[in-house]
Length: 455
Image (cartoon, rainbow, N blue to C red; front, side):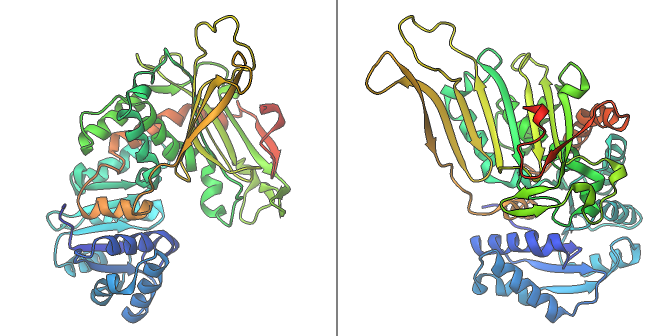
């Protein structure tokens, strides 16, 4: 069993990310492994008593499904400090309270996290300190490179955990077992047999009061630049020798280095749109441009669809489509691998034949394989059937898995520096084309499948 770190400091403790996701995930982890002797320190600029902080922990841990007897020892030892995460003196004071080399988790907006790292760069850190930073990692390629250089001065890359909770999902990690433990898939997982790959993350949810962040990011940066490109890397990478962090993340980086925008007209291979007023599941949504906190002049997209090429021996010529949007008619979170038709269908077999498709659900866990078989009655008539199975759900949710990696100093499911930069490189031409108005901003009614012209 891996040894756990003894000290976890959460900057931004009490904020939305901490109370809604991070602390419930920690509660799950504590309940799953009761041998963790963790010193938990919360820090924020809000004035909160230690007693109130501990009550907050109990509520959050219970939200994660943890029983009090599994978490109360950590709650009782936990402390809270009022501190400014961007102030060097406050940071020095917090570090002085750590009995062992800490893992510092920045549950903060990206700009505040960067300012905090700059303050850390002016003081001495305890030997063995590790850092956990939430995405996005920078706001463009240049800022990502700059941030990585800053962080590299603080701690070694092996102790930097760039958190993207998609990599903490057991549903995504299931993809590795599906690909590499089944010869029937892996030997056909190439351009010779695959016609197209699609990765979708469509939601019925609208803006949901996230204008402060989302209106400056949009669907491309919020979902595709980070989450879906990482799923692409797992889907297209070469088989790693092991699942150790160097092998796994090296294979992901190699796949992303080969990834580029599909050649062609920008408005066809990098489309964008935003929703207008409509109804989703009986709920009326205003036009995105009329949502509270939105600046219509930014022309922020709520639906993005891009087509990419992975220019290597395995995938040359296979289009890979990434799509994510909000306020759509249906929720769809999956990977779809469409296989090429058979070279020759024996004369005498009739009936509609559909492409063989493998559907891998990202949420909930599941897999479906569409194949053509002889139909009932007339054996010369083909029909398409689906073979379905559930994929194993992990013991922990995404943030429980993320925290387990951080506290055991295992960076396997964190984003490596070069991977973060490659993700920005891939979308930079798209951002430039959209900023210059080369690609029109289409519209679609909330509750629809997207712009009619896209179908």
